[in-house]
Image (cartoon, rainbow, N blue to C red; front, top):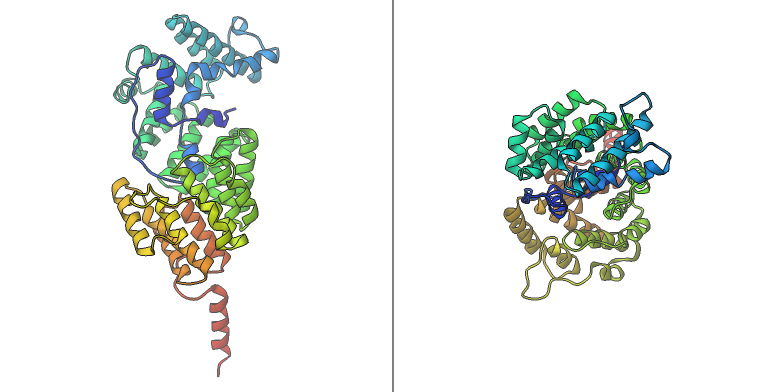
Amino acid sequence: MTTDASYRATLQDFYRAMARCGGIGTSVPPRPHRMNVSLRVATALLALSLTLPAIAADAPAAAASGAPGAAGCAAPGADHAADRACALALARQAETDRAAGRNDAALAVLARADAFAPEDLRFATARAGLSLKLANQLTPAGIDAAAKSAPDDVGLAMMHAELSVAKRDWPAALADIDRVLAKRPDAVQAWEMRASANLARPDFDAARADVERALRLEPKSAVTLRLRGVLRNNRGDHAGALADYEAAHALAPRPDDPFVIGSTQFLMQRFGDAAASLARRPPPAPDGTYWRIWRYLALARLTGLERASGALGPGTPPGMSAIWPGAVVDFLHGTLPADALLAEAKRAQDAKDLSQVCEARFYMAEDALLRQRGDFVGLFRQAVQECPINFHEYEGASAELRAAGVPLSAPGPTVAAAAAAAASAASAP
């Protein structure tokens, strides 16, 4: 039913998109926080595709299949496919009305579209967004006031939930989503949003239940498959996570896919595959810097440090300040000592309320492992203890410890060494 096209932009991008379509609103700068890239993709909820032009773009395919146009859609019936085709045709009519300035007609047609496909929340949300735009209230304050004055409006509730996600106000977001689900329990987008909020909190047990419910409703949702991939990676099921990411990519490719696929291949110690995946069109810094770092780590496991170093790209020029994680690149090049890396991480963490110190420990551990010096086990354990569980560095540290047969948190020797010591003690006179 839904696809990853429903989640193409952040809340800030949503307002920009609406402005390009004639909307009025101001951007909401979300509180910055870094998390698993696939999770950030999934939590960029209900944005560009909830505008009328994006929803109407689905209609030509329905028309090509021989489905009736808007004029032939009198009332919902028992044929789900026909009803959905009518909803899309009506959305296209609503966009035509809106473009012609027939705004009241567009709102009425969107209400009809919602009646034909109530499980698809795009129509209700598009109607709420258009209504706010026409009232010059497509702003955070306008969304908040409208949602409070009309608590039964599922479109407004979804928009308000999205606003709360951007603010990291998880209780408010979940309260809104639960109101939607009480009215429309088959709305996959709401289950996906609920799972995304629970992942970002993070409450992975609750998110797992949400994902399972969403997949029962729509087994081929690229959004839900990506969410399940995050959950599987977190539990150490990297093969399952990779299968989910690849299936989601086949359904609805995203620019972020090479990173989540490549980093998962790294977790599986498929370093050649990881390096190849991460070589595909990295984005600009800072996200693209993470791509380069993980590709370097994969190549270094294959070819050695010296031959892999070119994958890091240039370090920070003398006299310039590095935007995080640029300091990690300098450290891996050997031009920045470990204590200076931690100081840079602490400075970035204090400035942005992120978790760069735990990231630094993970990359220090990877470097120590590659060079076979220092307490890389201790550093990996620190990363596991300090990193949020929805960070790639948490996943990476956990995977490295599991691969080495080392407990994630318990101090002491490896599992194999501990078992050998116990056996030796038991056989001693």
